[in-house]
Amino acid sequence: MTNTKVVLANRPTGAVEDSNFDLVTEEMAPIKQGEVLIKIEVISLDPAIRGWMNEGTTYIKGIEIGAVMRSFSAGEIIDSQNDAYEVGDYVTGLLGSQTYAISSGEGLKKLDMSSGKLSHHLGVLGMPGMTAYFGLLRRGQPKSGEVIYVSGAAGVVGSTVGQIAKIKGCIVIGSAGTDAKCAYLVNECGFDHAINYKTEDINAKLKEYAPKGVHIFYDNVGGETLDIALMNLAQGARVVICGAISQYNDMANIKGPKNYMKIVTARGVLTGIIVFDFVQEWPMAVEEIAGWIAEDKINVKEHMTEGLENYATTLKMLYSGQNFGKLILIP
Ligand SMILES: NC(=O)c1ccc[n+]([C@@H]2O[C@H](COP(=O)([O-])OP(=O)(O)OC[C@H]3O[C@@H](n4cnc5c(N)ncnc54)[C@H](OP(=O)(O)O)[C@@H]3O)[C@@H](O)[C@H]2O)c1
Image 1 (spheres, helix red, strand yellow):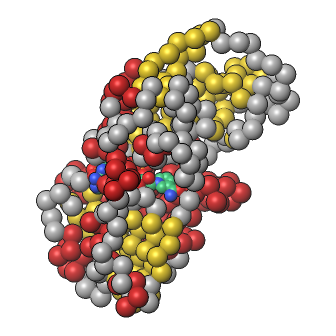
Image 2 (tube, helix red, strand yellow; image 1 turned 180 degrees about the horizontal axis):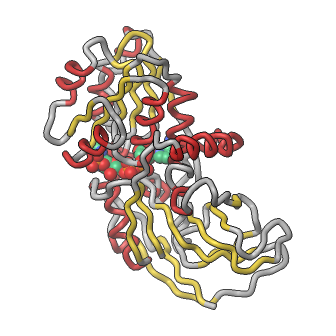
């Protein structure tokens, strides 16, 4: 058998480029005792990949040069030498951007296919959905009637945050980069307001939509957006730093908030979320989100592309806003 995989050829200095990757096809050794062979059907492309391409360790070690590009992927077990898994089981894990993966079972999660489509287990029922759930509920601690502003709102994390906040009775404002994304947030996700940050003044719009301030700011974008949100905090506000996609291409020169003293005057809390800290509780959250999807309380949007040869083109979409929904690559 042969496996085709995307490997890291070299590290980007700024934005991701096609030349950072190589496509490699190689013979696969048969699986050994304790291992399973997985045919990968869907690969998750996530904003964090840009950070994983850097040298060194943050919350996770950077990808080695020549190693397969790290990704959450999901697929079917087609051969098993591990008693815990049978041929035909569907699984997910950090299986990489490739056509087949061999796993010892460590970090592998068997999927309950009755709770959602396979691709949903990489998005709203996977790591990004868990980020939204725990980031909002544990860090943001929403209360009915409060106002939440979520940046990067049309992505899987942002749209899930906003929709869970609606379920919890909040007034939800989101910002995104196109009118179509803003219309989606209001018309299909039930957001109260959406701001096109490329054509509208976020500060003026927040003052209009949240005249008494924002109780929760859930930040996926960072930089100037964070600064503007800090200027619009209500008393006792919680600022949840989930991501900073506007900064990922130049983390050495990250633009920090100028207005952080607003945390003091608002008696606020500035907090961070790393989704892996809640991994023991993911099954509970998957069940609850799957229930909300079944009740039509959460809209799921996915953006699929095909072919490992299109890995770089697809990944770049995240940093230019060309994806509309959870970005998934079918190998
Ligand atoms: N802390 C954790 O444990 C954790 C886990 C998962 C994800 N995250 C973070 O959550 C955030 C959202 O992830 P996602 O998977 O839902 O991605 P996503 O929102 O589907 O995709 C990224 C989006 O970011 C927006 N964007 C790109 N460059 C931007 C810029 N310079 N300024 C403003 N917006 C920009 C684009 O939308 P527009 O068209 O709206 O610009 C793009 O579609 C990311 O920051 C990610 O790193 C954190």
